[in-house]
Image 1 (cartoon, rainbow, N blue to C red):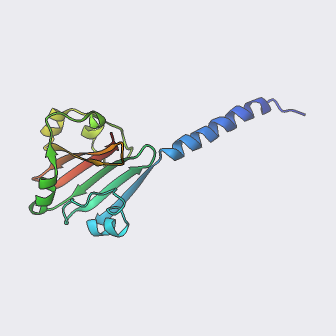
Image 2 (cartoon, helix red, strand yellow):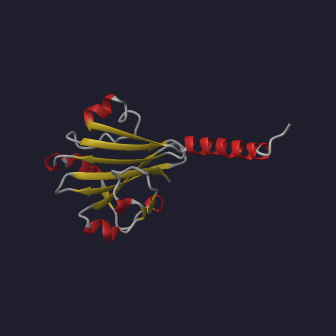
Image 3 (cartoon, rainbow, N blue to C red):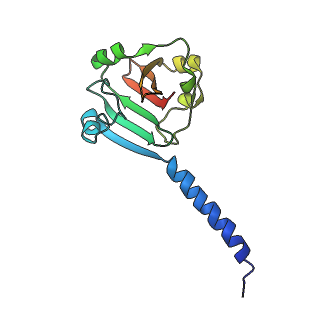
Length: 164
């Protein structure tokens, strides 16, 4: 005997499976490290999730990772007196590269609203942050782009990274 609910079972199962597959492929991992040394021990610098030019005093490091497509969001604090290496590495920009003009919402509480969606450089500057970009080869055909927002006086920074 076929139940009246049986015809709905197949579409519901298919929808559930699709949600699991889609959600699992682009799922973010939300990680926290109290110090840069802890992130290094976890392999985040060696695997490229955290750049090796962050200040050695970086602490309270929040990291959201997404594997497919590969994206990352990071927030950190540092001693302003320990920022020379970071300052020398970052490239100030007048216009944002296409790949970082719109920053997807990582759906984590620590990521600032000013760095979500279509970015407004003037609004970000009013919040006390300067914008910078670091580009590096991701592979033979693409470039990895990190967009940094840094408040030098307070020793706070955020970056969003993606392929271009």
